[in-house]
Length: 232
Image (cartoon, rainbow, N blue to C red):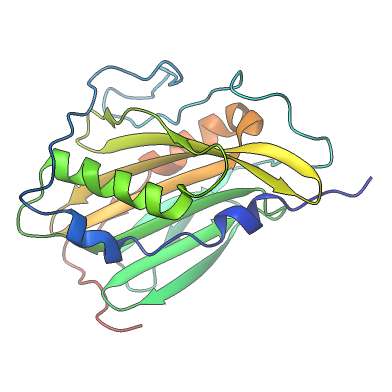
């Protein structure tokens, strides 16, 4: 049976986040994030401030057996060459940097190309409220995935560490195979920088990856003394 590299086609073209900075203005419409957990969000966080990747195994039927199953065999530390940030990533996932002035974007795909991790960092405005961060993230998700069939995004969730989480999904069809893709995106302000971390994959595989993805997003650290490179 031919196995399919499913996610690389649909998630490989993640938009540049910093280009949407215009949406984060003092007059941006106020969107109150929910302080309560989403119905699909696990409460098994490791610490009171830990982020938690949401799972929703009942949202879609089991994916086609031809879709390669993602396995994560431990994590390993990654530090950006500039020293700007560090994060623990799944072993064997190779970084791919998208070059853009004043913005650092790094993506990792698992070897089967059926799961994704991305980090996007750019300079923040002088003042950025949680409501503006939420609006910026919503705009980013709609501009990147809004045209996909069945696109939905859940109510924003205010995390205890100050970040905002949005769980999103859409339907993808490749080579006569259809499945639901699910992602968890977290936006936060880290000193004078804004960061977006996204994990994604085939929806019915996310529960098996949740513990690893939780450790990944909670390992992220920004060095406030390092400037974002001005040119690629």
